Image (tube, rainbow, N blue to C red; front, side, top):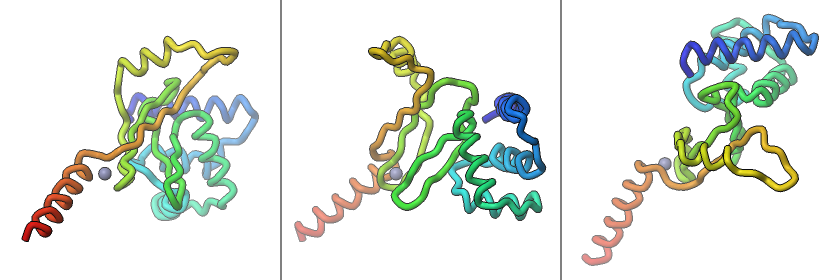
Length: 163
Ligand SMILES: [Zn+2]
């Protein structure tokens, strides 16, 4: 997320808070800044630690949960349930109505997929009796690193059998 996107994420968040007569507390502001400074996937626990260490904020579990949910609803972050834990990451462009990403089912690496064709296809798609206002599409598979290491391992096994 570049600085322009971060500013727009901030204003989306602030507008929402104001519009709903909520208060922009120190916890909320700190949480938003912390989230905007992340560079990968994070868990709620990791975010809580970061808030304590870098922002001297002790945020309750409920506050953390509610605000992350809000960031998710505002599409500032995306969430993904891994086998044991839910992780969050910044959506690369806030205010955009869709996101396509790939997840490696072996190492869990997540990358955003930038495909003009797919974005075009989805925006042209008309669903029956349903008006689409956003999407989140996950493609599962193997990343190139895992694929290479798997190939190497299966080659080793084959060579082992030949001996
Ligand atoms: Zn992988």
